[in-house]
Image (cartoon, rainbow, N blue to C red; front, side, top):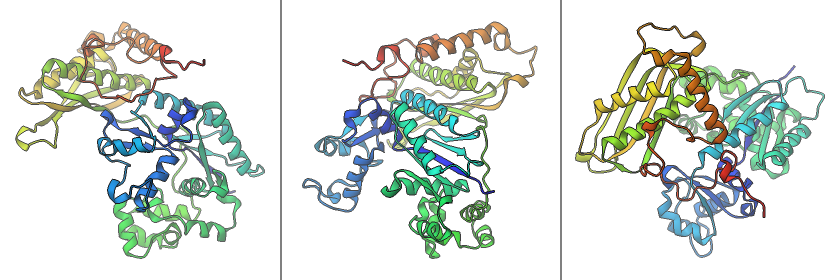
Length: 446
């Protein structure tokens, strides 16, 4: 019995989250910016159509691509006035909103299949095997309508016998209007599937990197069908075993299993650029403490502890070389811990080891590594008492519960700094309200 694997992917997820709470934007171009409102990282279909017109060098209201260039991944300040001409809605990245909408999306999707593999913030694989008597195209439309009704998010559904083919089906469902955002390759004849694969560029095949795609093109392999007909043995010898598996998947042989649950992370990193350069150790300690607290929160969410903490700092790499400085420091814990207070103390010690006066720092990172499940924790009689004391665990649990209910940062460690005294934080001048996670930012209906 052939497998039925569905990939459900939210369309232009960041932009769609903004539109879900402001439906008036549905017919306008919408873009979302990166950290510190730097570059354009997401765009809805109207903004993408504008990009295609720019790239094809066609006049758009009197302007040409040669004058504007590509907006996607361009620094915002370079295209700000052009965006305004087309009445584009511009938003800063609202990560708290996007993360919560992602969790809601995946929870809704989990009801449609016994096995779900969350692949990314806006993608899930669903195992629909055993539903051969069901019209899966209709089922895919039911999934779409449920997500649209429940969250206001548009999604596309691709169904096939392997994960690679499901990704291609999802891509085709988005690109070709006749499928109405749902495509079941298993319902088509092999000849029709091959015709569709010929329409998929090699760059759009899941798992094909830029370097491999360029080499494949030099050998005349420019689309998914040509890759499908390539010898798996040749692919393994010339490229990698991963490409061999992709070819098998394109031919309907399952090589990438559908894991029921995502494995816990083996490393947790929190890293952000500052809204302005930091020149004092006190402010850098606040930044490192804030990043460390966020990483510890993620650590507790997956019920793990860490044995090693690392801190890195650097100045702006694009400034004069004489003014550049970068360093990092790793420090081991006597006993693994998930306690924010202990981890912040260790992070501040690591920071002082690498801190140098006289520099304007641009970015800091905190990395928690050597992770292990908390239930396997081997206690150490020489470890600091508060790292493994039951009251310390209770304190962290209460803090996480309050922050989950009332919004992140409601309760925090004093070392993170007080509200209004941390103007080094990331710039987000166009940030929308956190509609779903902050009581005082709930949407209102007049």
